[in-house]
Length: 380
Image (cartoon, rainbow, N blue to C red):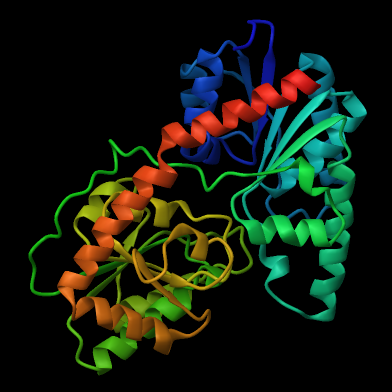
């Protein structure tokens, strides 16, 4: 496919995200003959990246981005790194690496750039004057980052792609659509539902308001008041670096109330889904949520919101239900329908497994990425 001289650099905000979302792609690139480099903020997972035979470089992507000097310093470090290792391809992942890495690649003269837009962020969720200004500014930054000699921009859903095209940030011929980060069908196996008296409804996400955590808790209250027998579980942790994170105080109040069982951060999501009957994600907007792809692979019916990303992860009314965003009453209603109709949710779960096998297998996602690498390296 490629010669050993080809060098690819993955630039991502955190080493944990690289391992959870792009490791199979990087391993396939290495197997195909690329020398693989990874740049991210430093963390405990760096040692795992090095164990895989990749070259690692530390670039600190600040979470808040409030200090212009710090942000400029990050950009300068990226330019220096690119000039040092002279990659043939740069694969930029998540918002800051896409914006800063794209600009740095222009300064460093990198010939081939792949930008992965896995979501447009919270700035696209509101219509306030300030939000509109920020969207305009971000569109200008994207436009600057996308002015490359040879560029492909990977989107996970068509809404995000069409939004940036409509804002004039890039041309449609430079875009590619890959539905999510993929799932290992061998690791996320379909198993029959457990036989329990109260069906288990699981939401796995960071405890952010724009993930729909508040609506999930409110839906649990509604189901309790209706006398619906369901066990509501929330898997995830507070993200203190995110302005929309639930506070420790609010989480403590919810725990006292006892309407939802809080599981904290868990790495055994496949096992958690195997113990569940329904998977829920009432998010406000996503790229294409990995949690819903994993739920489909495990053969679990899904309830999620009719917003970009979430609606692209299911086949409505076949693998799950779509509900209006920020609507806990509709959310509770859809969950109740699945709780009270075990045959329906089992049918949806089986259809979800078929969907995962057809669209979301990690082998398919990896192959699509390698095709783009070949395309860009051939044209660069």
